[in-house]
Every structure is written in C-alpha cells, then in structure tokens.
Image (cartoon, rainbow, N blue to C red):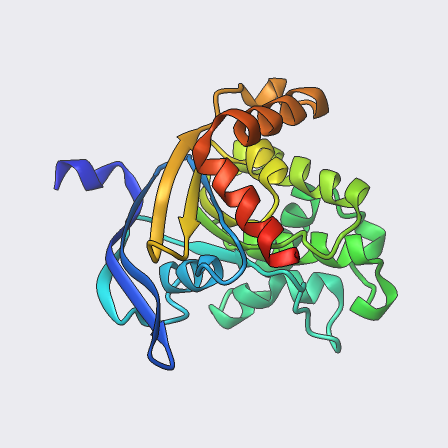
Length: 254
C-alpha cells in the first residue's frame, strides 16, 4: 500500500483482445507522480489500446487499473472540438458538464488558455476560424481546465508539421512543469518521446506487452535539438531495444 501512495497510475496484469486476437497480455506499468512516461512501439502493438484502457475508455479483458490521481484530462490526435461552440466554450465544456457556474467557467477557461499561449482574441472564434495549431492548443487547454493531476496523450501531434509539433511539445513540457501533472504519452516518434518524457516504455507485439524501458538521462532544460538527435542516434545504434523497434518499422514499410 505504501508503494502505491506515491504512484499516479498502476496497470497490473492488463490484457486485451480484438476479435479473438490478443494484442496485450499481462502488461504491468507504474507511473509516478510528476512523471511523464512515453509509450512507443510499432503500429499495431497496442499503444493506443493501452492508453485507452488506462484512461477508462476501454474495459480490459483481464487485469486491473488503479488510478492514484484525482482528476485527469485526455488529448487525442484530432482536437475533437465542438464545431458550434467558440474556443472559450470548448475549453470550458468539461466544467459545464461538472456544473461549474458560468463566471467561474470563463475565468478558468481563460487561465487554461494562457497556459497554452492561446491569444485571448481567439477565444471568441469558432473551430473553423482557427488554424490547426490553434485548434490543438484549444484541445490542450480543454484538458488542462479541470486542473488535472494526470493527462493521457494519444499521439496528439502526429498530424502537425515539424515546426508546429516542436511548439506543441515545448508547450506540454512547460504546462507539465507549471501544473505538475503526471502523464502517459503515446507516440511513434522516438525523438518526441525523448523530448517530452522522463521514461520511455517500448511495446512489442511479439511479447504482447512491454519489451523494456529506458529512463531519459537528459535534464529537461538541456533537451535542445542537438541533444535529442544525439540521444535518438545513440538509442538506435547502441541499444538493442530500440534497434529492434526501428527494424520492425522498416520491415513494415518495405
């Protein structure tokens, strides 16, 4: 019991299958408070399934999920904004569902918008009037407006261009430091995992679960492009765990 007190999330023996095909079996994972864990692995290995189970969106076939957090947010690959609502109302929507008074909703939505550097002038705009980056900022603000102590990220920046992706990664790092939340971050991009996470967990469809993990040994303040590139090259060249990941993806492309 004492070990779980400082743990934000526990997955214990989690298994899942689709149409009789087992994709996850016996997965065990702990995420500590204030820790961002990245889940990487080839397509089809169960990354998104695992994060959806962890977030309570899917029931596992077996195993248990123990949430040590009080409130959570979730950010998807697509912003999934309400098209008939302004950016401000989209951000405040979780608070509306919770019955929070309108004045407080507006104040908290604006604070969340400030966290993601969303211009106040854009809050009255509808999603169709916002750029892709502004829509994703709005989605991140919506996740943060509930003041979560845990955030689930399901490949949130995959559809963005390189420059915008970097901006969003820096935004997440800054928000995590300020709001002090833990998180589970699904990505297929090893450089992104190195940049945003404290620990990288590799999933492998052959073992139907976790093949291994590595702590990112670079201080957050030192993760510039050169340091991230060097770390990725080192992983791919010198670490069999990541070499296998790279080779698996190359075989799929071929």
